[in-house]
Length: 422
Image 1 (cartoon, rainbow, N blue to C red):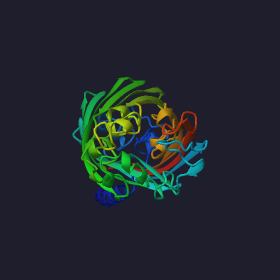
Image 2: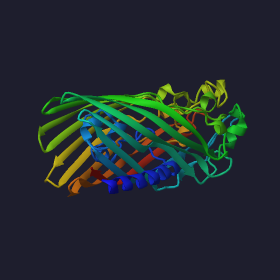
Image 3: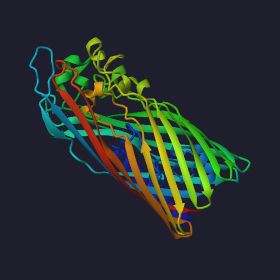
């Protein structure tokens, strides 16, 4: 037990350092598909499945059913993004035509760790802690796309430290609450051409990393209604951050970039003691956050970038449907698979600004599994393939019909995890 605690403490320090320095991940918009290796292998489901000590990131109520456990995970994340412009610039006055051709964002591989721990306090209560990246945006185009400096792009990352308390009522029902502390960092580069549209051109681009802390919370319910049906639900509040002061001339409301509220509901069906089917539905309220939800036009013409009603990325709310299957093939081996789908949040009318943040993937296919190495010790694996998707729209700053902009993205996520009880 002492050895496990020492290993957990060492992993905690490594995880804090690694996540803080490398949190550029995205799947559903800029949210993760799932949290922890078990959830990822099941298509991101988990609100009704107490899968691991990372389950609090989806439903804090599930933790009292997890028991005493430590979970560690390390993901290899590989996003691929591409911009294609067709049609020549018109050259007309007050237009902003882009150079035709295809430009790829530098393909990067990110190492993204996560960590969870859960302790039982008596028979009906548990406390836990989770640390994980919660998504982000990253583009690096090695070309002066906007006729300024190069490279052009942004780097946004966020990570959460979450505490959890869960309480069980009787044998089959529980509630949980998770206060959250989050930290974000952001930088932008190559956007000098938009200085004339900014409320403060000195706070628009090329200012290195800006950082701020945010606070929010999640509540949840889990109920085993019958031996074959489990129901779960959770709600996360908006995570309100301090201003990214170095980019107060870019983001609406003078530098605020908050995380939107979201909810998840789901069921898990257990036709046998070896098979679990899970279905989750998640709603993410991107449109309620001015920095990401405000449209580019007419806002860009009516208020400068950084103003309360300044232009944003024009993202719509996103509904995600997740499906997962778990099969206990043997006493040692558990296999998982999943699928997730949801209309991506970027309308065709908003492709121009989203050159910087092409979060346009709509479908994910996942595989995973666990192997019981010894009593209380499991090796976990998950693979996520974000299927390629393209969204096309007109360049809104050009003459009508003059240019088309196409944004394409796909990605891979490979994660190894280790779970051990105590």
